[in-house]
Image (cartoon, rainbow, N blue to C red):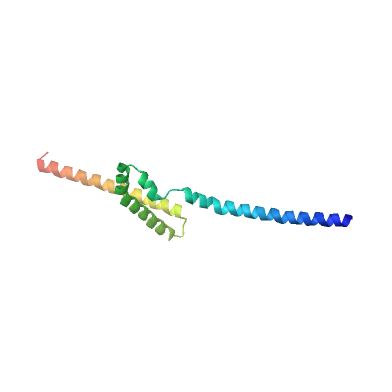
Length: 128
């Protein structure tokens, strides 16, 4: 009699183990698949958001669209160039920013010198 009860207890515990595993797998699948699906279903598309803008914002958005696309394309092009280097991208980016800053300072300095030369030339022409 004791053997029979032990066997039935083992059978029910094995059955409940499989049921628990099934429920856990099913619940995990529902959460992993259903969560992102629900998010995609509820999230409005870019077109729907654009239609919700007032006409003034729609006009501004359309005017700036080309500029934003060009900026993004330039950014991606720069990243591609930076990735060709053996150094990490952030280091190459800092070096490029430093070079651009130095070049801008050099251009400003040359522009100031040119302005001084023109002023001197004008003074000489006027006889001052």
